[in-house]
Image (tube, rainbow, N blue to C red; front, top):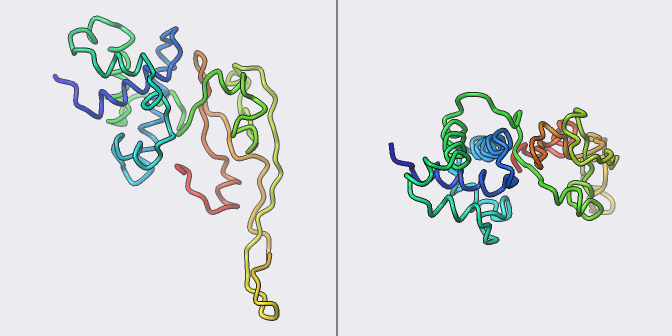
Length: 202
C-alpha cells in the first residue's frame, strides 16, 4: 500500500522532531500529539494544522535533515529503515485514532531546548507542572504563575471596561502528559482553560 501525503508528512514530523536515538515511543508520541491536535481543531488535516499554526513544528521549516530524508525517501528505502518505517506505522495509527496514544492526550511537545533555554522558554514563562516524576527527564522544577482572571463589564459612569467578578484562577498553563527519549509532552491545564475560556488545542 502506497504512503499517502498526509501520512508521510506526519511521519516525517515525528521522525524529524524525535531525537536521533530513534526511541520508538518518542516517535509514536509525537505523531499522536500532532494528530490529536488536528482532530481537536475541527478535524483538520496535518497540512491544514500547519497552515493554521505555522510555528507548531520547526522540523517542517528549519531544514531539519531527518524530516527531509523521510519526505524524500522512496517507499522501498523507508521499508528498509526500522525507524522510518516505525514513523510511518505510528502516523497511520495516529491518523486512524487506533492503538495506544503514548502521548496520553498531548497536543504539544518540547525537546532538549526546554532545558538548555529554560529561563527564556515560553512554557516556563507561562508556568508548568510536571504531573509525574517519570516525565521529568530534564530534571527541572515546576514553575507556578498564579493568575486570576476577572469578568469584564462596562462601568456606566466612566464608560470604561473594568474588572467584575472572578472568572477563574490558575497556577500554570501547561501540564506534562508523558516523556520519552529527549521529548516531554504537554497539554493545557484545565483550570487555565476554564479561567480564560480558551480552547484545548490553541
